[in-house]
Length: 267
Image (cartoon, rainbow, N blue to C red; front, side, top):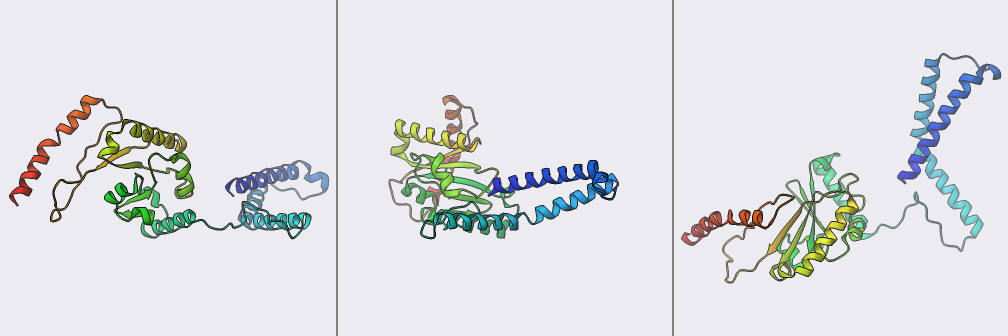
């Protein structure tokens, strides 16, 4: 649809320019009234704006005429031709994208993309439900300027599944980051971690965008803590880091965690 519209505008622009050039060079030969250059430019702009204004109507009429002519050639029993302008049945993914886009426009305005962060959450269903309850069933969650998008398993070809699920949501920056939820067993599996990282790298290349990655390891407590609210613990790492830098960031978490633990024991 976009390519067809751009092609139409390009053709109309060329025709208006050629028409103005023909009028200016050959107007006297055909007996047309002479117009100053300023008036000729204004008339050309007016014609161009009118043609652009009626662009959707002309394209739709052309599409319907082409489809009718195709049916006349192949016969009424043939399958109806598919056109970029013809409406197609909406898939569940398309409905989810439309619902989310309408929700964001209503809450944040037309320029919602500047005010909202889009995070793709990948992992197994149990781990995703642990960090974002109901996301697996609802497909998206929104709150406090952040939208979580369900992405499926990290081992799946994300560069194919993501465009299929969330195509049309944002035309400019598709994502602001990826959250990978995993458990202790998955985190200790080097082969699975390597395969997941490879899929995320392919997704980033497909989107032509460097995606920050947030690893969220879901852990189970050895004893019941139903009366206490579980809170995540983590740290941010630079784009380039080594094992020593990682160890230093993790060591910085020890003292705050000890203080929090002592407070909970005393309470």
